[in-house]
Length: 228
Length: 391
Image: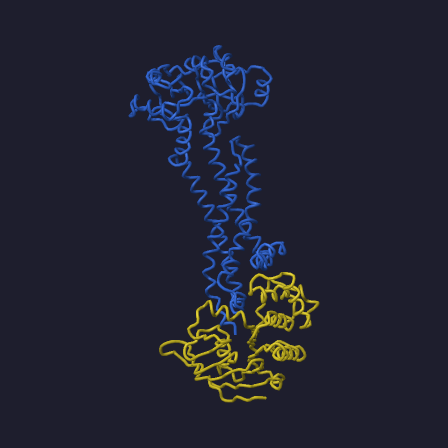
C-alpha cells in the first residue's frame, strides 16, 4: 500500500535563462494516510510552492510526485483536474464567490463531482456549515460575513465532499483561537475516522502541538522532519 | 428564478447569480442589448415598410404574368412598353387574356395648400378578372367619365372624406386641370411610393394624362389558361418577344424582383442594411464589454474553482449562460419599446410599419447568436485564471 503523497527527488525552478532560480531542492518525503502534517519555515522557504506542487496546481519539472497513486510528472490536464476533485483546498484568503450565499459556496464543493441529488447536497452543505458554527448564517452572502465566518465557509467548502487529502495554507490565520482549534480538531478527527490526510502550511504555534509531523523547510530544502 | 435554473441546469446557475448580484452591471448590460435590439427593429421596420409599399400595389392586380420594359425597375418605377406586344402575347399558346396597365403620378393640392401626389392606375374596366376581388365590383361604375377609387390611407385626406365615401357620398376634387369624382375607397397603403393611390378607367387616365399614349402602357398583364404552369407560358413568351427590350415575369417573380431591387440596388436598402449592421455592432460591443469585465472581476473565484477541479467547459458554461440571460432580458424590453415606436411612427407617418412574427424571431435568434459570439470572445480572458497564484 503506497502512501497518499510520495515525493522523490523533487526540484522546482522559477523564471528562465539567467533569471532562473531554484525554489525547491531535492525533496524526498512520504506522507502517511490519515496524518496531519505541518509545513513550516520562513517566508520564501518554498513551503507554499511545495503545497501547490502536491496539489497538482503546478507542473512538475524534475523529480516525481505520486498523488493518490497517480504520477503527476507528465500527467495530462484531464488527469490533473480529476485528481484535484479528490482534494480539498483551504486558501489563506477565503476566495469565496461574492455572488453566492454561504450554502451555495459550499455546494460548489459538491457539484464539481457532477449531478447529484440536489436535496441531499443541500442538506450536506447545511450540515457542514452547522458543524462550523454557521447554522444561522447559511443564506448570508460573503459580503455580510466577518473574516472568520468567511474562512469557516471556505473550510466547509473544502471538506464537504470528503476529500482524501486536504491542502491548507494558513487556514487559521483569519480565525480566533477557538474556531481555529475547532477547524484543526475537525481535520484530525477526519484523519482518524475517514483516513483524510492533511498537509498544512502554518506559523500558528497554537496548532503545532496538534500535528502528527512537522516538516521545516529553509531555502527550498528540508532541514528538520519531526514526528510528534 | 435561481431554484428554477438550478433544476434546469442540474447545477447552481452561477452566471445568473453573478449577473443578478451586481444590479448596476445587469441593468447596463440589459439596456445595451435592448437598445441594440431597438436599433435593429427600427431599421428592419422601416425597411419592411419600404419593401411592403413597393409591392403593395400588386394587391390591386389579379394577373399571372406581367410583361414590362427592360428599362423599368419595379411595378411603379417603370418604363413604357409597346402595346403591340400584347397582341403578340395573345398569340402564344396558354395565354387566355391580356390587358394593358397604365400608371402615372397625379399631383393634387389639398385644402390646406399642401401638394400631394396620387399614384394613379388606369385599367380596362371591361376586364374585371384582372383586378383584385375587393375592387372588381367598382369597375362598372368606373366606366363613368372621371370617376376614381381612392386609397383610404391617402396622407392628408380628411377623415370625413373617407368616412363619407364609405357611407356612399361621392367626393369631387380638382386635379391636373379637371374634376375627378371618387366613388369609393380601397385599401392599398402606398407608404413610401406616393401619398395615396387612385384606380380609374384607362379612358379617364388617358384624358387626364394627355401626354400618355394608349399604345404605350407601363405593363401588360396576362391571364393564362387553367392547368398550364405560369413558368411554361413565360418561357414561351420569352421565346417570342424581343429579350433586349421586354421582360416577362410571373407575378411572383416580379414581386420578388421588386423586393430584391429595393433591398440591394436602391441606396435605401443598403442604408437600412448598414443600420442593422450598426445595431448589431453596438450590441456586440456592449455585451463583450460587460462579459469580459465580469470575467476579469471573477478571475480569483474562477481560479479557486479550477483548483477545486472544475474544468474549462464549466467556465465556458458560465459565460454563455450570462450571454443567454442578457439576450433574453435585453430582447424583451427592446421588443416592447419597438412595438411602441412602431405604433408611434404609424400614427405620425401612416407608413405600413408592422411587427412581423418572423422578424421578431429572427431578431431574437440574432440577439442570442450575437451575445454568444461576444461571450465566446470574452472567454479568452479565462486562460489567465491560474490556481497556482491563489496561495
